[in-house]
Length: 495
Length: 141
Image (cartoon, rainbow over all chains, first blue to last red; front, side, top):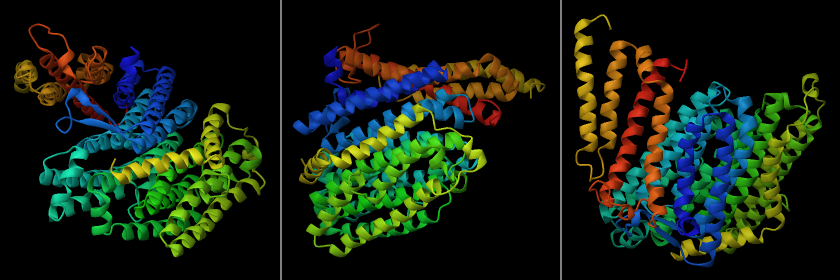
């Protein structure tokens, strides 16, 4: 029995949430479906933790689906990078699931919570599948599973505008998915294989053909669209703003991160650094777009009047830091990007949960309705502010660890103007975080707000777990930095 | 359209054959992958025809929405359950070789049979569910 669990961990990683979803529908009652979701997501997170431990010690773990060996069958391939992303996604999924019950009761228009939980677990399964699979076409299949589920998660928002936001997300997501599929198809045409390791061996000899060039272009643009790289980010702000709080926290912390992983996997693990970066020079355009994205999105965030929207634009900017690291194509740069996947996931996830806690009591996320909320709900506001420090990159927060790693990587490449630009960009984050702090603490709360109490503990606890993690790994960043470095080295080393 | 005699009689006669053809598609050549999706769509087409002719209320009486939902969920569980069964019998996930021989079907044969059964069940349920969701237009699921 123990063997059946341990030897098949890569399969369970995806199968648990995938089969957990239909069981939610069979359970039907909101309380039962919720309890089941919590159980499944924590078990999934435990799988990811064990996988990370195992792969850090040894080589990649190849799991043959259906017993068909690679490259004929579909294999799951877990290396430290994949395991790290698995842990981020499933960990956030587990913490957010604790929060879901109370928040959904307030925000969802339907009483059919079991359907929401089913979509939640399917989205989780899709994201984990994209990360774990060693088959290029399988990436697309899981991409569609997670995307379709996330449109549902967004569209169920309390505001009717959630529907148009979800529709827009669907159009952009379908475009991105199609682009990735076209790219995979063209690569298949040239090599006759879909297995990632096999592709990595067979692509270099034919890499001068136009087909391979076009396939890589399609995959890069498709992934950039899905990960909301500026200026392809227009689907993101509305989707995060009008979605239920649970969705905003979960999607913002996981889905774009997985797409960054997919881009890195294709660029370094399949097409290879010599082709993508030395020959095609992908680094410079990515660097320019990332840096512009950081500045433009941060500036736009400053002028937002809705806290969730502000956080959404901040996400676009933070994605810029990840891509900036990856664009260097050095172990240190990629490690900084990977590190930020984790640090931003816990920081932003915690902040969205904190805003959700405020919305639970006040019924609004607009800044004007949250005046003085810090005096009425100090615990949730403090969680938000500490998260905000992480976005700025204040020392002792996870955001600082990333920025430090990123600056070191930039300095090592002699890109000191970019390093200075990164430092200055933090000032924009100071402004938009400061704006929320000012509204929350330096205003007298209105009469209506004064009558509200602090959010209940089942909303505060998950928010504080994530914010707490961002502080713990801000002080004790050696572990995350070490894992990210190991993951980047193995990715670039092709091992 | 229930008052149009020709439509009513013809569709009444046709629906069993549509269902039969769906099962034929499902189970013919069942040792090869594929077919479950098509069979599910054909079966659902029979239900859609029933809904068009006799009205959705009548279709709901014959096939309650809860049954459709459970069908969609069960199909996925049949598929995934086959994979889990393979693990419990000592193989990899969905490794049909370890499945026992049942009714003269070898492991690979039985595995594909079960998996396609799950696909057919889920696809037909979801198709019927989509019809219900569209025609109810948010009034109820």
